[in-house]
Length: 251
Length: 134
Image (cartoon, rainbow over all chains, first blue to last red):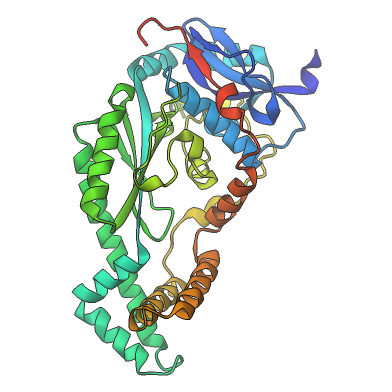
């Protein structure tokens, strides 16, 4: 067997009737293949066993294949980096072993995709609003101005801490507002941890692909209401990374 | 027919324009992880450490925030001063280099580099479905 040099990179699980364009390429520019087993299939591509992955183009290849799939068919995305020894192990140990679980999950996902809502505060706007609203912030700012850099250090730390806690409480409030607005359009919502200090909202939602326009409308409305205070982006359709749960091992 | 969602305000949006940081947030952290029985393994992943994503407020953060207020005051006191704007921008981007998630900064750079390298990708990677109901 040549399997000593080739491994199989696995992107995700799809229904068996999904087909891939002949020229579809994945990680390391390898051709994307489908391994079918019963009603389900795995999207895979060959990978040299000694090929280290993790470069930006690898991450993109993984995401783009899965996200591209999500807009036309249900898909269970695997976390980046899943590699199996050969096609046989994909068919037997991955697909056959979990066939019914995967088929059920794909069925439930039919017509749905993930969307990501990411909002950032405008730093300048946030700070000037805070200074307008908050007496303590103004007092600290004035204290800092009247002192040398060293003498004002404690006040600067206090002001910064006040800002950080203001960001956090506004983030909570804004996240709640967004989640509330998604009630009608989202099947499920997952609030993500912030990944940037000016993050206002970071929410993943599962929605019907057909209702993408409605999701966009919600985001537009929020942007309009925010009047430049928060800038919200909508990403998607994406594979439902936030909404697939690994079958828990019996341990 | 990739239905790219057009973002309001012209910022990046849609899968084709997700920044590398957006991708990293998602695919390294989320998605199906299979149990050990399936022998799914990680192959030599050179992952940029993902610890940097976590937002932790520290004294350093506080001082940076206070500095941002200071910049705000300078530009408000003399809004016409072009020099202040320039200085402000420079400070800002310097602060961003330090303050922004390290990954994100790196991601922006990398995505710049990668930006136009693979114009075919979007098309090539299309998956077809011949499912009657779709």
